[in-house]
Length: 232
Image (cartoon, rainbow, N blue to C red; front, side, top):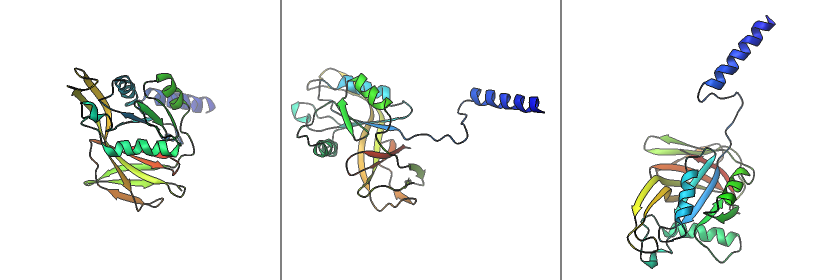
């Protein structure tokens, strides 16, 4: 009987290893590391960072988001995906960190540290380090003509829940400015950022579908740290 039990265990183990998507009992997926790239189609230094973000866009365990700022628009090319709200988010990070300057391409990892967006070694090291602090589980699910967002744990006072709408991919011929004549490919382009109010831990909050063909949710502490993240 012991040999039979051992054989059954070995068969079960080999089946789990061979079957795509097999999951181990008790295993829970960790929340993704959030990489926010502040970029612009009008910035000649940004395409390498955009290309690096493209490699992260489909990586498991990473939520990569491209925020197109608007302060490069005055130099001849208006980035069609830029917005004052993207610039405001970058300025908010600078204020939290006591910095009076912003730059592109800037990558902010988990809302707690930054790096030059084209510095692959720095980004890979930050991603490999994992989430920057304690995690709070959040979920996002599709409902009829809406989304259901749930914060599953206790969040610190002042935490903000953000709904992010983004597009998977855009290809843009740039006709003017520093990147004139180039065709730029942008991934995970953020189209909207909406603060969700009225949420309580353990209860779902209903939200309208955001602009963009994909959606994600971020739970962010008052000091900027990302506490939770999930992608639909």
